[in-house]
Amino acid sequence: MIKRNKGLANLTAGYLFPEIGRRRREFAAAHPEAKIISLGIGNTTEPVTPHIDAGLIEGARRLGTLAGYSGYGDEQGLTELRERIAAVFYDGKMAADEVFVSDGAKCDIGRLQLLFGSSVEVAVQDPSYPVYVDGSVLIGAGGAWQGTGYAGIRYLPCTAANDYFPDLDLLPTDGLVYFCSPNNPTGAVADRAQLTALVEAARKRGTVIVFDAAYAEYIRDPALPKSIFEIPGARECAIEVNSFSKPIGFTGVRLGWTVVPKELKYATGETVWADWNRICTTVFNGASNVAQYGGLASLEAAGLKEMRDLTDFYLGNAALIGAALGTLGIACIGGANAPYLWAHFPGEASWDVFARILEKCHVVTTPGSGFGPAGEGFIRFSAFGHRTDVEEACRRLVENLR
Ligand SMILES: *Cc1c(COP(=O)(O)O)cnc(C)c1O
Image (tube, rainbow, N blue to C red; front, side, top):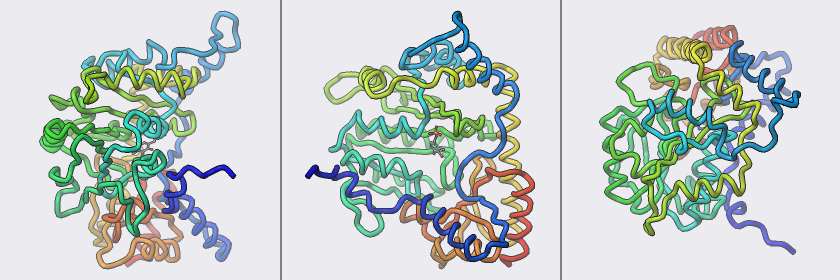
């Protein structure tokens, strides 16, 4: 019989969110009267805003006309959208042809692994967004599961003790490091000095940074970098993935982008850019043209205003959750420049705290241990939710978690 992909067989750690869903359904079945509110999964809840929605509608309308119809487009995305992304998010520092439009950051992270194969040494922040690790395991670079982590992955602990920024002496040589800022799950944002140190360390070791900036539009502190390419030297050592999902609620529409600078080279001297172009044209056929018209609308003045208002709204939720945790005396970080709060429950197991909050408050959260060994004892609160639900959840937390 046919053999199973060894990478898949190695993927033993249950994916976090299905397990949360299973526990939620189990609780709901046992307590049919409970009105469960989720501050768990990082999924957007508010409708697409009017100007951006009009862009999507116009994109669909065009397809129904002889003059406006388009079939397959350029796999790298609409030229106009690539130019707008380069101008709006990179101040023109990155060229339009270094921007590759995609169906989302998660999908790009999965495909990026094809660039480096199964023998590359991979490092991740611990805790981290699960796809960096799981994608590496799938392609064979992660090795076998060993109790709390995979043998082939370097976990770089990010804790209160190091200001949620990893010890750069732990970076691999000639390897790959995934770095997410603003961070999911912790909500921590690396400052300019920290990212400068990261870029310097990566260049010294010949390591490539995959910088996930999916939450960049949640940054409000003007001193904090929104892109790795604000840091000198990053063009020689970094790739950036980004997404329209969290800033404009395109989680279901599916639109993102990856920036690969032409200076980024392999040991052989070939450019990573040429290979990424090859991968995009080979196993990806371009983002939906309707989605791209929506993305274009979001980068017009009216769309940018809506993006700001929507991210402000979710940050408002984060402030409410932060205030509730503060009332309870629970130490937490994040929430100011990110839609997540990372709350510490010292001496308790994350899944136990998850169960306690579900039982006492009927609120679903995310256990920190699901994001890596250093997440044990933490809970992630997500600020994605309707305002009335977030207010009600905060009331229940304050009343029942004392
Ligand atoms: C939500 C999220 C993404 C996924 O983005 P898509 O574009 O929807 O695939 C990527 N990275 C992080 C850290 C996320 O939280």
